[in-house]
Amino acid sequence: MTGYEYRRAWSSVLLSKSVAVVMGLAFAIIALASSAWAHGEKAQMPFLRMRSVQWYDIAWSKAEVKVGDTVEITGRFHLSEFWPDSIGAPKESFLNVGQPGAVFVRKEVWLNGTFVPRSFTLEPGRTYEFKIVLVARRPGDWHVHPVMNIRNGGPLSGPGEFIKVTGDFASFTNPVKTLDGKTVDLETFGLTGIYTWHFLWMAIAAVWIGYWFRRGGFISRYLRVAASGDDVQAADKMISPTDEKITYGMIGVTLLIVLFAFSKTEAALPRTLPLQSGLITIAPGDPALNAPENVQVKYQRALYDVPGRRLVINVQITNNSNEPLQIGELNTASVRFLNPKVMKDPVTYPEYLLAPEGLSVSDDKPIAPGETRALIITAQDALWDTQRLADIYYGTDSSMAGLLMLYGQNGTRHVIEIGGPAVPNYTNIGLLKL
Image (cartoon, rainbow, N blue to C red; front, side, top):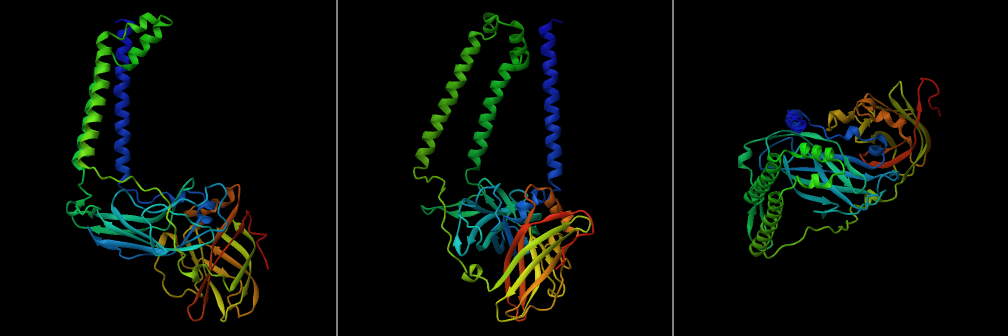
């Protein structure tokens, strides 16, 4: 066997092994994907989850639907006043839904009562109400999140809940009325053309690659060029006149196909609109959500107790309302730490983000109107570890932020964002005191 024949045989072996490895990895990924349901929010750094989008009052209208039924995700989010400098400002944002594939169709999105089919601008420090309308498409148990996509900031996921979809996937339709009055089913519209073009280009690619592999393959031809060294003429002899004709022919056929298809499509669909990329202006929304609070909370300092898995915060609260108030909840990174002495009724919320007895206050007596009181708030639960929020002390900016919720005796609620540095503490001594 000559050196060239040996290299050609070896390149064929390498190619076959590479194809086998790639196919094996692809099948493994597909097999694992069927059991995956989370969307990676735990992989995001704690400072990003705590100090970007504060999701709260999230509700899923239904826990079980049939194919074709609608589901609404509603709630509010507060854009943190402590927005990290390391990610882009929310000047170009897009409210979406996190789901394991196209199992739901996103039909409508509303923000402060404004229909927002495309991107919009948000302002840190403001609170927004939203509604996402979904249509069930594929049967199964699916974990669904609201997601805020920020340009240069990435996706910021909210809490997720399982929704069970029953029925027959083959029965799903997605009719839409176009601007010229026609009704098309987006589930099948243009599908024949998609299949045709994909298979056409794959066939052309197969012919092109097959021709050159018949001529010895890419690797073996490269080895022959490398072996020729500076002998340009020897390398040029590898490209025969027939090779050149085939190459020019393939280029010509490709251009003719593109030109023919473009002219045919232009004649069949003369009225087309480009994808809309402008920003939508958001209406102000409920003034009460953004009005100056009559409760002031002064964040003084905080420690994260590593052995105890608890965040201990010193605050000073001034109650300027006309009723006594008690601290009932701390919501940070979509995790709800509840004070059981105040939040006595059952709470409907994803269990993996709920700490029903995770919040305690040094003095639980109601804060009287006009009173200023110094308090120690402790948020303690294993969720600090399971949600990887304990990694807060690994960041270069070890700070926290969250929504502190105070409740009045008549059911009123005051939502105030607090935040600031959170210093790690590695022993059980030296915790904060009043």
